[in-house]
Length: 375
Image (tube, rainbow, N blue to C red; front, side, top):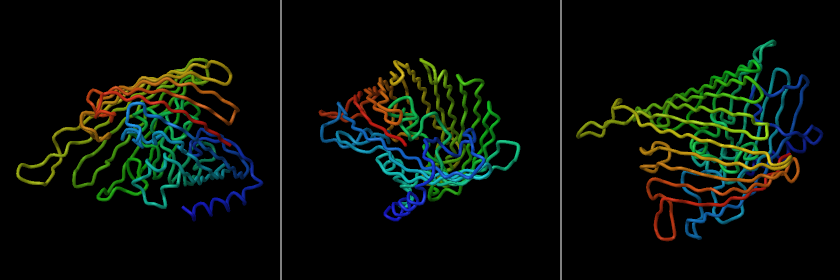
């Protein structure tokens, strides 16, 4: 980490004369690309405080299926990064270094030196007349409508489906954009993995088809085909993510999302530890609805209703997991670059899975606030 910070500080000094601007995922072919070489520096810091109103006061972490805003009853940094991006009309590259509890919990399985890498990728435009890009490296996931950057999401905290699908990917991807259509195909190291899972030969593949008939509607289908298990278990994974974003810039907007995935069941021969392919699949699924209402030029109200069903513990790791979630939040832009947010959330599970002061219960209630600044 010290080497990364030293390198990043040197880059900051070298970039002291470049333009500074906010940016989203720079490997998205929908972003405008300058015709002259440009080096830009962007940054983001989100501080937060979460209070779990159900768990004992000494509990330090939120439930195990959450990876953002994870720490309980303490002020902390969820996500902070600074990013250098280089772009010409035919070449682009990004390097971003991160810290925070988002990185701590989401990258726990990665090699130590890579846990602080938010983005590291290069890309080349393959056609002079078509918006066709080839990118390779570590980049933000194209799966889902929520990202690791809270300010870009409609709610302060992430949905259960977002927390349990990839936030980042490593591999190579081909992206073609026509304006209304975006088509993407990628070859990946795995399911949110920079380092390939030991025992998995891979690779995995993922796709995206996105259609924007107007600036008021976005329709998206993303998929993943591969595995997150060693080859010896022969458990292939097929996952689909669907969403529609309706009227995002209007006074009232809605997001409809649905995830469904399956892992092949491992079957054990009687009297043997050998596993063989077959026996059907374990299926998990998750619908979500998010609504947002613009109360003024600086403020929004948002609400969310969601459900996650993973009773076979494929993704969540809790047997019998069937949980509803409800949240209500308020956002206020103190300045165009400074966002204050507050959100109350309730989880309601079919079985008692949440830690309480007297054992385990079916419900969990929390209150989260955050202050995010971007530059």
